[in-house]
Length: 346
Ligand SMILES: *Cc1c(COP(=O)(O)O)cnc(C)c1O
Image (cartoon, rainbow, N blue to C red; front, side, top):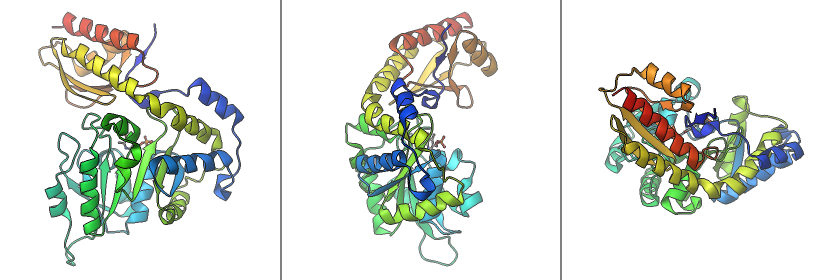
């Protein structure tokens, strides 16, 4: 039985072309700046995202943390959403390692922070207050159901940041999904940002790695922060070579994942006892009716026995994510499995 792994787009395996690139990768010591594959990946990333320079990092978490460490001093604060990955899912790194104080605003269901909340959240220069130094937005917004933020909205936040002399970072783990969803070049979504992190290892299917982009001066400082965090990786061109394939070959196909997520959502919507909550880009969130006689643990394990894996999001909420290793047939099969399970236990 084939496993239908909808837990996340992080489960994607390298494509055949990536394995080939890995086998043939030219490598060198990247701490000396001598890995040709990493240098090429960084130049390509900066070019595609419309930034001056880029830095290959092991994870998106490290990319975000480096941005915070470069933009902020200890005791400075960062405006961030209460559902942001950087706030919720990065083990408090900003506070633990950067001494950075999160100024947490409420994420709206569309992934945004209200502009009025941001304005009101920026502290005046008064020695009672931490110094507000930066704003971070997430695009697409994972916990808000994969929703993408519009260029207009992102630009409005960039303008507020500029007016107040704040740094503006975008956690763009899935920024290429956002670009496809908005029908825009990824550069347009990032024009107002001082820095951006994106992941090669999610929907773009590379095995490892993220890239942090920004000005030359920012990346120069980011190199030291990466070293401090232990992220200088020597012959990591072995994996960066797969990242080049990810950028060249995988960004153009994300639309297919979005379409499959839509089909999946339409299928789930018809199942009585299962409530479709939200569907955006490559994500589908649903919850299980209380009248279904299955505990959370039973629902997850019974699905797994039938070959279907998905993410658990707390309460009776679950998440399915489409990606390159999910086919149309797998979407149909996933709907069938859920329908059978829910109907049998109604
Ligand atoms: C996955 C993710 C990250 C971090 O990525 P890792 O590579 O797993 O550290 C950051 N932000 C968002 C929104 C993510 O989904």
